[in-house]
Length: 494
Ligand SMILES: Cc1cc2nc3c(=O)[nH]c(=O)nc-3n(C[C@H](O)[C@H](O)[C@H](O)COP(=O)(O)OP(=O)(O)OC[C@H]3O[C@@H](n4cnc5c(N)ncnc54)[C@H](O)[C@@H]3O)c2cc1C
Figure 1 (cartoon, protein in one colour):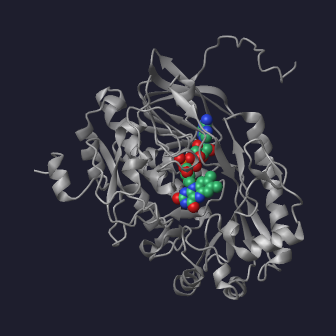
Figure 2 (cartoon, rainbow, N blue to C red):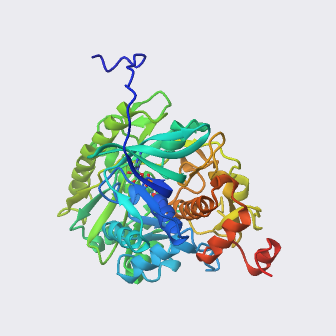
Figure 3 (cartoon, rainbow, N blue to C red):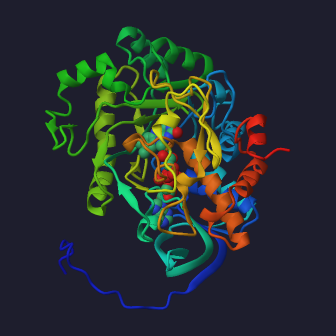
């Protein structure tokens, strides 16, 4: 059969699909969002089934090895404005030595992503969630516009889960898309991280210190060389900014002179492809904590216009080869890296976006960036620090917060389904979608899981749940929705 003929199709025979279980809440995808959704639904008293296509939990944070949680918890004066499961995860990681204890003072929180996998298992087990691994949520079961669960594929074949409400945390809104929700695709990038062992960070830092002015300044995580060195010496955390290599004078000169990746070629958008389909070979984000003895490397982008299996597969395989190509360049050229060896390469290409829903509300840049006053929404499900457009540091600079609206995770055109990943909610921002960092994904996950649980208990569509019911449950679960005055204005305090 010619499998390339996209216009061709075959007819699948109708068949009876065995029901694995009937549950209150089905969560598809066990990344940061899905785990938070499953946990909060279970803590709200629901029976929960979580389907994860990998053999581990955590998604981009573990399978793609993204070991840095952007500190979008704290505003400039140190006030913590994001609480709930997102903060609990960081706290618990810190308790077992897998994240810095003084994480509130740092712009990025370097954590041990292997430990994170097990933390999620422990928490979900404790809450009574049924987690199925190597289980791909394949097809939503529809009754008109209502999603009644989904068929999934596993080693046991095709089975169905029936659910009162479903939360789509696949990261690319797979179920919402297949249920007929209005979705948009945008040009997005993807990367795969790897870990180096035996890097001599002190030697590397000394080398960077020989040309402090050539250090990438004004970027995320650390402002300049002095802050980078201070952070390592004071907190044991090494952080070289995302994309830092693009502004690192020594790297640019060495790359040009060595021609390690040959000549670049322009793609049809005018981007420079250096190695096969790779852009930004020199992005070179790097981070670690002294306790780990390893260094995470985040470099190389693969960009795509739509979620499509042939291209994504090509990029995913290239990314694994590229890890060794860039590792070879680094060990040959960077002082402190001579003895380094690749310890582990992530297994999933990490997608920064790609597909997102059109929701009942949109998280808007005007609300999220640049405001010196709090943005208020009646359907607030969390508060997040507002970004300062003049500074690329992750921590909210002004001290003001943006209310995250529940409507942005309620898709149009389908019912009984919410989208729980910050990557695929309705938010402005293209590839840099506004609240797609790990904390944002957990925030959305917690809110959608709780909504699905409460709605299923009442026999409702989660999108129609009275918002104060959801807000009360979120407060009960420790989420911050504003200060006391604000809670009183919302009628949540007497
Ligand atoms: C390269 C890169 C660097 C980043 N850097 C940072 C950073 O420094 N700091 C930060 O805070 N954030 C960063 N982010 C963003 C953040 O890591 C992610 O947006 C966030 O972790 C996404 O979590 P998620 O659960 O929404 O989605 P994902 O992590 O994508 O999780 C989706 C889960 O669903 C599973 N799945 C998918 N489809 C199905 C299906 N059909 N059935 C069953 N399971 C399925 C996947 O296996 C996965 O486990 C980065 C992202 C990338 C890609």
